[in-house]
Length: 352
Image 1 (tube, one colour):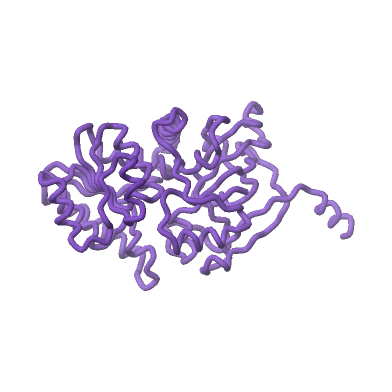
Image 2 (tube, rainbow, N blue to C red):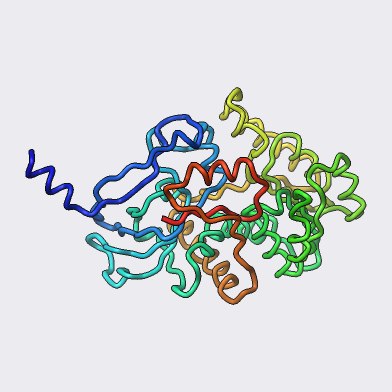
C-alpha cells in the first residue's frame, strides 16, 4: 500500500473543477488527480484557456439539456497545447496549439479530447482571445450565414448584443455590410456604437415601438436567446421573408426550476413551427450540436471550416476579442458570481 501511494504521489497531477450536484457557485469543488494517459484516437491537451457561458450557469441548476449525471467537470470549450497523443494519432500533433468544443470537461488543467475534434489554431494569438470565439464564434457565424443567410444591406436585431455571442454577431454582421440594431444595458451602448451597431436599452418599455421607428419596413433577421414572450415579439418585428433565429431560453425554461424542461422545449418548437407555417416569415431554433450524431463527418467539417473563418477574421483584426474578465481556474466560483451579478460585455475566461 505504501509503495502504491508513493507511486501515485510521484505521478503528474491535474486540477479540475467538479460540479458535484445542483449547487451555487461556492459548491463547486477543486479536485486534484493523476493526469490521464490518452487512449486510442485521443490527445492529452494542456488547457491554456476555457470559459464561462450560459450553459454552465444552467448546469449548476441541472437545467441544461443533455448534461451528464452528477458529478462531472463542466467547461464547454477550451484552447490548449497538445502534450501527448494516444495510439492512432499523428505524433506531429504534439506541441501544437489547438481548440475544441467539448460541451463538458473544459474546466481543468489537462483534458482528454478525441483528436478528430481538435481544430488547430495559430500560436501567435492570445489563447483567451481564441476562447471568446469558439462556441460563441461558431454559433454567431452559423446563425448569421447558415440559418438566417443575411445579405449585405439588410437589417438585423440582436438581443443581448453585448454578450459573448452578441458581440461576435455584431462584428460579423457589420463586416458583411449588415445594419445592426442591438439591445443591451445602457452601460454598453458606447462600446456597441464603436462596433457599428445601433444600441437600444433592453429595458425600454416600448422596445417594439423603438425598433419599428428605427426599421419601419421590418427586420430581416432577429437573433433571440431570451425565450418566452420575447420570441413572439421578435417574430412580429420581422419583415416579410424575415427569419427569427431562436438560440436559447435565457429568460425562460432553462433557469426556471419549477418548469418541466422537456415540455417547455416541446411547446417552444411547436410554436416556432406553427408561426412558420402560417406566415411568410420563418422561425427556427439553432442547435449547435445538430448533426453531430446523424452526420458526424459533416458536423466536424462544418465546425472546423466555420471556426477557421472566424479565427482568420480575429487574426487579421477584422473582429476583436471581447474579454469581459480573466480569472484563474481556482477562482471559478468568484468568476461565476461575477457573471451572475455583473452586466458583462463579452466572455469571462478562465486561465488554468
